[in-house]
Length: 250
Image 1 (cartoon, rainbow, N blue to C red):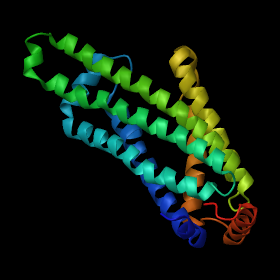
Image 2: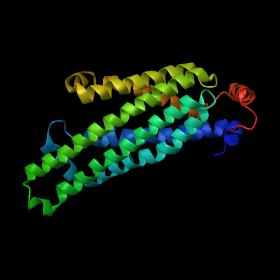
Image 3: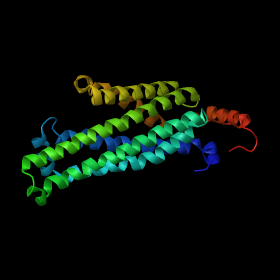
Image 4: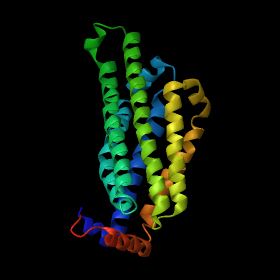
């Protein structure tokens, strides 16, 4: 993606980002919202293990969806960086770095999900562990995934706050979307930090605390997909940026 391409065709990039963002949201809703809620029973290792063993294909489909999310999110964050760079290159780069760390941790967390079904199905493990112990090991993998995923979302929350500020300052994207994205970031930080250090408090505010995150991300996604950027304001920002750049700079 060349710098001049996005300057000339911002709507193509914006709508592409919106489409990828929508795919990420749908995959996440399926994997975490549907599959996990259907099969994983909180504080009941035996029930969770039995549900996964009874629906192995559904579990595999959920894990596959989880694995696709970071793959799709990388080009999405790159386009977001290009769209927000005219506001502040340094802050847009910082947001992208937070997002990359988030995606790296999230990707590693999926290793925990990948080992659960083989652990429960393996006859070799039954020679060393009884079924209750295997269920406990599978549950430990689930808990490890949750911990790593919460850490990933802390970094993503920082991304949302920075992107929210950049959107608010951009003039070519609605200020309201920027505010909603910043609130989404604060929502992620509150939910995930409390889940890691104050689980009792986290239980009392979840899932309600994550509603602002859903609203903020969905609003940004749908705006990019349906409306894109205000081209007139975008061109003004690019023109201003070009005049302020030293001759010969990239």
